[in-house]
Image 1 (cartoon, rainbow, N blue to C red):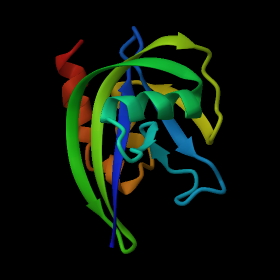
Image 2 (image 1 turned 135 degrees about the horizontal axis):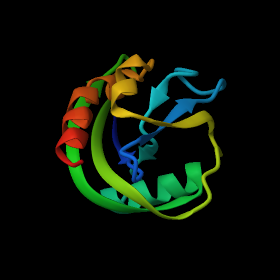
Image 3 (image 1 turned 180 degrees about the vertical axis):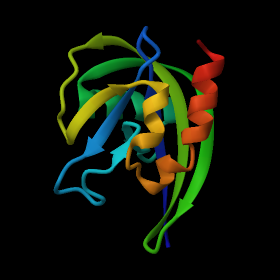
Image 4 (image 1 turned 90 degrees about the vertical axis):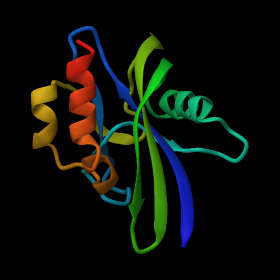
Length: 134
């Protein structure tokens, strides 16, 4: 079974909203929601991978702040080791380079979205983290 290291960003704005992304129609799990990020390349740190992925996917430069949580998700084809970090935007103009859409969502809206399975596992921890960092 293939093992993959993945990083994701909980990017907050100054109104305590979080940037969430919907997978594109041609992706695996189309139209499901995720925290933006992606695969860690060989010999790449988690922080550098997250900065690179956010720049590629959303055209944003971010500051990675702290680890919120981590989880393991096992599917038929692969095992995903997911690390989720808090982050904020430093610069850039948000663009939807790979997603169907992106939205800034409030904490109270997160449970209403159709999340990818790995992201669904950590929603409670993200909400708890955000509520503790207002």
